Length: 164
Image 1 (cartoon, rainbow, N blue to C red):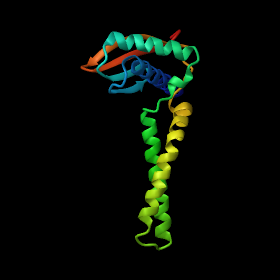
Image 2: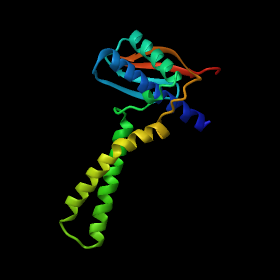
Image 3: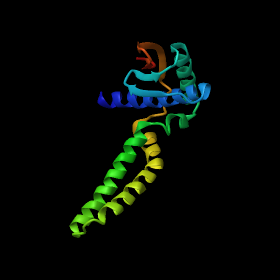
Image 4: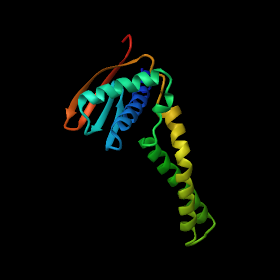
């Protein structure tokens, strides 16, 4: 049951990314934020409900036609989380190594350099984490059932698995 819910969130996360890509292609740069759930996804931004519904349907159709690259976004928070983790892990390991060697004062510059390398490595790694962990582009059995306004600029795109 948990695995089914996680797969639904991952598919909705992929559809959220694809929908944002469609919206950005249609309207150009605009401030948007999204969050996937088991039964759809939320979009925060100045987008009309009908436009969001239309974009979600187009995004779903494009994913179903095999445009799986739409499921991975350079704007995703996963990228930030991966960068933070790698930077912290790199800096912590350097500082711990400096402390074990009894070094004083020189550890910060090395930790900073290690953190920067972690951030640089995070760009391609974040996309891999999205592709293999936080999204699923196989949305053949998914359908958009509607869009609702939640509160002000917050809207929800509702989805369900076909046949359920």
